Image (cartoon, rainbow, N blue to C red; front, top):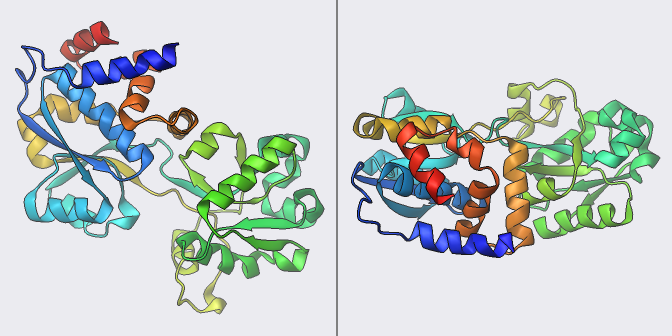
Length: 323
């Protein structure tokens, strides 16, 4: 029953227009990125700012490139939870010019991607947690690597690493999935039957929140080598070993907001979540077919103490009464 009550919390509290609302803080725009975690983090931010800090919040649906373009042209939105810097080349210039501040990491480990196996397989065969161990025991992963769909950036990297690590030479077939849904379904099927699985995935995601996976070490991270491996036009002779580096993902705020609403900016500086926690949040959203607002409510009720620790005393007092 608690799950269903969360909808009431989300709808009642997030649409509240109490008499003292917006008394302490002016207008604040929050970019709601067009994917599940981006929308949920924006909903959490909006709720906290409205109900805890008294801000008049406007959620702005956006995506990586248009959000940064708007920052360049208009200095808005004031806050962008979960901006992936690798996909926003102009962001570095804005930060260097002092127009935007990376207040905190959206995910403590950054955006993760790489090659994975089920944790139950890693526990049974710990040698499979390294690429050397897999190459020496291909039968333990059913002689198969689950690859990205055509058109994904990871497909380029995986295909280039195939020769670097001698995957096919070791007797491991590259199985190309036609869609992200098929790739995730293959993981679900493996877990249902307790079978082996070896392939590419990324996080935080609902899949990694639902299924315990262990990342396979591909060796040291070489950022420059990874960049070459990710280039579809690169010379195969230049390809080399490198694990996947973490992608920097930040809660960004404008310098104007820092000056205008320092307490709000301080909250965003505290809003750093673990990758595991975000994956659990996304798994709950997926399993309950929940909206971003319902997911935000579940998170705030379930992890109330952690959220309250991120706030100043006044906001903590206000939200304690609501949550």
